[in-house]
Image 1 (spheres, helix red, strand yellow):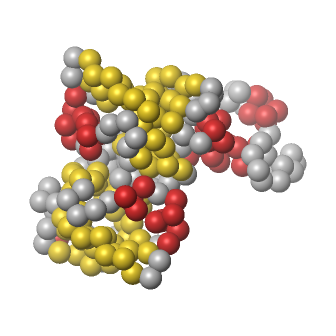
Image 2 (image 1 turned 90 degrees about the vertical axis):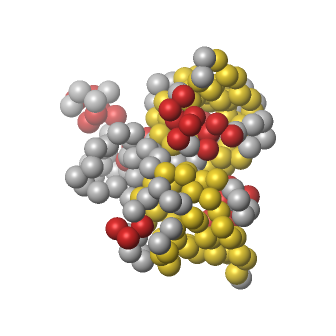
Image 3 (image 1 turned 90 degrees about the horizontal axis):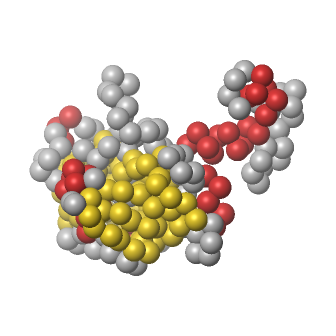
Length: 222
């Protein structure tokens, strides 16, 4: 699990194709790499990757064909900057929100507006994911936990977020321009609630076996 609070920036040293996937090599001088081991999880632009090999200044990870298909990591080239976050320890503060590192979809930056050092981004997403996006809710963009400012269901569906000066400096968000593709992970709690309530594509839950709207109302959650 992750928090969506980026701990360091990294640089892609190599992106080497192998079979239908790739071997990704990341270098960064801003993390204590000796504290991590092979098999540890590290988020790269919001994608949970497993460290296959560690170096004194970074790590290598294998990208599966699925990861290459459903995330924007396929766009990385040597020299690309990336957001990095090692997995969460239970003793750490949860500064953002719970993030699994399992990307739901790829979004596209539709526009950016700068004002007094902050950056307002409008990001388009596939319409089927809009039901998980609510004003003042949380969303993860390239591994960054952000608060949603506005939402629109008009084609194309989009949401807006504000990047404060610190986040702009500490992540790759400041480099975004119209057309940039970003990894999107919707709120984990919204996903589980949908499954428990049977409102998604899954089969409706048996009211006697799961959580229902009546149950939530009776216990003060709805």
